[in-house]
Image (cartoon, rainbow, N blue to C red):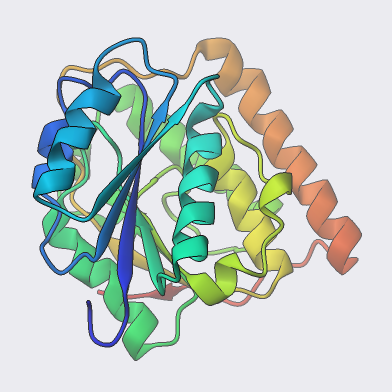
Length: 252
């Protein structure tokens, strides 16, 4: 429990046998439930995750067919809603999200009435010394595009997957409509804008090791912009406007 809220953490994982155990181990004890989604891994990701069920309240769900990181997150969202959790966080299976930041991400839900809280690595002091240059530039460019396509004009780090959402807000979303591959973070923002979700941003520590990005040049130059343009079109169709939302709440 965090305050009076039951907290679930969704961990999308694909071929993360080396790091998923560490990611689970680091999750704070106040978290009520951990939901690991093994997205059709070809390694021992699911087996390693299930070993933790004896120590933590953990559920491991395996996709027989790969559905993408967004598809894995949506499966976790559905399970959290089914089980009655109040707040649902997303943390990666590669242990690249600092668990010490989780309370700060949840706090705006309790204190400010935020519906969706997004981690902001680009606001972290010295981020340029930690984040690889290509990702630093790419994140700024994608965030600029997302300001226009999502409706949230003050988004700073659109690509950060460290997020918290309330069950009340999740219930408003048509989860079947969410884009399930790369571009999920951008697409979900447009859907959230359409249901009037109140957004907060919280600086989070960027963590990088030697892993390679799964986003190809073609995906970055063509796929991602196309997903965002489609998101903007759907948002316009629902709301009848391209106007930007009120400034995003920032929690320092």
